[in-house]
Structures are given as C-alpha cells and as structure tokens.
Image 1: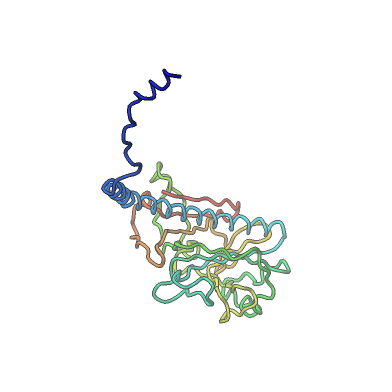
Image 2 (image 1 turned 60 degrees about the vertical axis):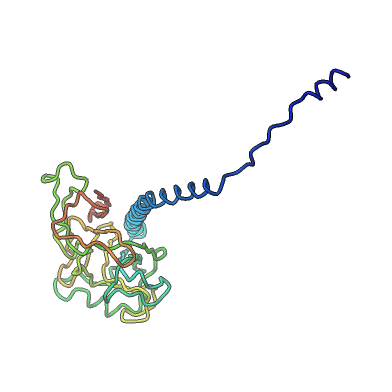
Length: 284
C-alpha cells in the first residue's frame, strides 16, 4: 500500500498534448492542392465520358438494327428503321423536334415500325417509286410501332462521305473497310433520303402534327434483306449501308475535312451488310 502511494507520488505529470486537427494554413494548402488536381484531371474525365457516350450510342444503334432485322424475319413482314438528327438545344419533349435551320445537330433519334399486313406498302419501281407509299400512308394506319423511340444525345451524323479506306491500302487500320457507293447508302450524306418516310408517334400525318419525321429510312424485308428505297432504284440492294457518326457538344461539333485521317479521332462507322445482316462497328 505504501509502495503504491510512493509510486503515485513520483509519477511525472502528463505532457501537454497538441490539439487534434489541422491549422488554418495546413487546410489552405490541402484545398489548394485539390483544386490544382481537379484542374489537371478534369479534362481527362470529360474526354472519358465523351468517349463512353459515343460508344454507348453506337452500340445502341447497332442493337436497334439487329433487332429490327430479327423482327422482320420472325414475323414475316417489312420493318422500317427511321433515323433523324435534330437540334439538341430543344427540350426532347417538344413537338416538333427541329431538324432544319441553323443548328439541327446533337440529338439522334431512331424509331422502328412494321407493316401490319406483311406487305411493303409500296411497289418496286424505277420511276416515281414511293408515290403509293405517300398516297396510302393514312397517318401510319398500316404500320405498327416496334419498341420505343430511342434518342442519343451529343451525337452527330458526319456530313461528309468518308473517303475510301480499303483494307488493301490500309492493312493495319481499324477503320479499313469496303464502302458504299455514296448516297443514299451513306446515311450521313444530306442526299440520303428515302421515299418511305414515316412520322412519330404513329397517328400523325406526314406534313404536320408529329414530334419526329424520319426521312432516312432503312427497310428490312421478310427474308432480312436491307434496302433504302429511292425514287428510281427499284428493288436494288447495295453491298453495304454505312452510317457515320462523330461526337458533338450540344449542337457544336468539329468539322471534318473530306480527306481527314480516319485513324485519328473519336468518330465511328456502323456498316450493315444488306444480305447477311452483319452489323460491324469501326472505330480508330
């Protein structure tokens, strides 16, 4: 007992402890370092997100084409896939979506409809093809919607035809491919329009009252063969149909020269094999 008192009496006083936490100067230094890192790393994350958005959209379009062909074959009918680009600064709920004017860019929409009675709704012809489609359109009464409208933000149809990039000339290129012969089979081209337009939602006329009008239209017949009907191409079947895309920032996008290096950039090409239905994606 006495020894315990003795030890307690000689126990040195506890040293004064430093208060926990950072000083104001240390906090300011940490905040400054975080701000610098955000400035340096921010653009990299923006680029990654942009690339991811484009990739997601491209494979979304690929899936729509594959599903449309499968529906046509399974249901022994004609299926029509409409593509349109509109002004992304306009709220997506607004009708109509703006596809003309100064900035009709940045939002790509796809819709799929099918013939109710299994017929093409137009007769093959080498002159005035499609007049019967428009005459009998009846606000889409002969068509049925297949799935929902799909929209992709920050995506733009490349308005120039990519020049030839053949495997022979570019053996090590990820973009090397055999291409279409031009409009209407390259859908980014302004001249790529079909004589089988339709509106969305179904039930509206071709001239007004719609949210979207689709003039770029790929149709699949009951055997799965893909065509784009023009006023004079009859039942012609191209070797491939090509859709070229690039990212946009809202309605803004980088203009690509006709002879740009296809192995550099964030653009993408979707090619549809018209007879075998193969859908291939090409990226740099």
